[in-house]
Image 1 (spheres, rainbow, N blue to C red):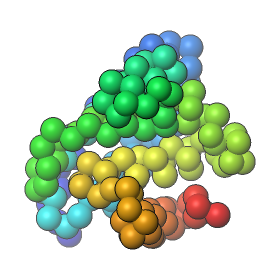
Image 2 (image 1 turned 45 degrees about the horizontal axis):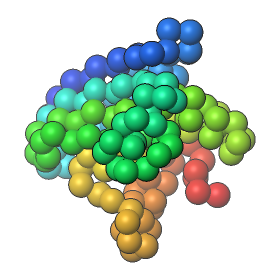
Image 3 (image 1 turned 90 degrees about the vertical axis):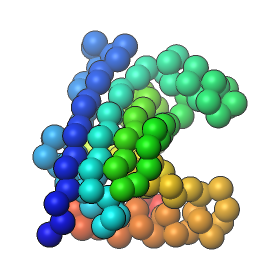
Amino acid sequence: MRNLEIRLTIQDRELPRQPAWPLSRPRTRRLIAAALPANCHCAALTLVLVGRAHGRRLNQEYRGRDYATNILTFTYSGLPQLHADLVFCHPVVTQEARAQKRSVDHHAAHLLVHGVLHACGLDHDRASDAAQMESLEIAILKRFRIPNPYL
């Protein structure tokens, strides 16, 4: 077993009346650890929950897209000592979960794994990269008995 340090901070911004992060801290840590490659020794990740307006502003500013998206990943230092912020737009995450007839915790788990893989340098701009990333996500989620999110 590798020696892995995960520092995890969960910030709830702009959402005083919304439910908190849907996954327990231990489950969140296990999902993160499962998504990190073997050469990662230390991960400092901040999970930030934002509202729709803030999510839209961030997506516009950093990606040039004028809508709120489910997750944005900001990586400050790469492997082997990963430092990143994962920004979840809570209203979008819950809306997508309902639309896809999935539980919010399963959808949040999928997006968490997706964001960690982005922080590790994976992307899905090309079809071949998307296929690789999706297969990793499916395999990781399966270990947690979470159904394939792409079906």
